[in-house]
Image (tube, rainbow, N blue to C red):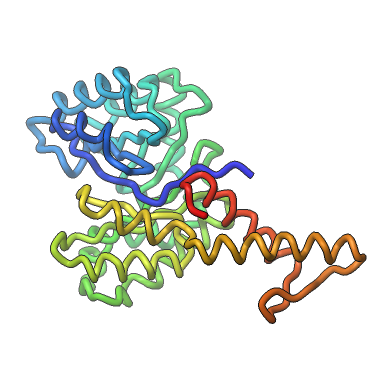
Amino acid sequence: MHIRPRRSALYMPGANARALDKARSLPADVLILDLEDAVAPDAKEQARAQVMAAVHEGGYGSRELVIRVNGLDTAWGHADLVAAATSGADAVLICKVDSAEGVRQADRVLRAAGAPESLRLWVMMETPRAMLAAGDIAGACARIDCLVMGTSDLTKDLNALATRDRLPMVTSLGLCMLAARAYGLTALDGVHVDLEDEEGLAASCRQGRELGFDGKTLIHPKQLAAANEAFAPSVDEVARARRIIAAHAEAVDAGKGITLVDGKLIEALHVETARRVVALAEVVGVG
């Protein structure tokens, strides 16, 4: 089983050359090189050039490189997509998507610009319309690989409150999780904006994992450790997963379809989950 870890996805401002360089040494699974929210209008073209140069230069190791582009309804979006198409990045993240057609439009621009089939398309889920169209968006084209929650914009559009328990977000998080899993996509949780609230960040990470998210988007390197820990299996989880795999194999050899591990019933569906836990653990070096 091949798994690419996406425990931590750190936004890096495309206009900040020092940040792009520093990112080469950060313990992030994913680097989102941002041309959108983190870049002022008068710095958009400079940021695009810097990001493309940084990706071309390389040196990011196994970190997954994703370029977040401006929307196609802006003055920079089309040029961003054209540049990203052959940049060598792993994926392009499109924002403010309300419908499946918005995804297909971006895909058409990428194809026309010569994007290889290996270039994946990630989608920001950050508007009420996107929540209602989550299933259609997730299945819009074969290039889609990941749904990314934009909880800050969504909170604003819902006139909701940014609470510690994130109860106002639960419906939206659930809709996007369902859509992602229905189409075999990765799902990344939204950012925690209070950099001084370490306890709140840890709680948000735990909740995201409990809901099924594969990782969390982050706005500062100081948040990486919390996300990497929360979205990786613990040593105990890995040990139990190995026991499940071994016990089920013994049961199958004995002509049985089910068995018990730690007093709990184990069948094939639990083995599938256990194998995923072990595969992720091996990639990130746990257990």
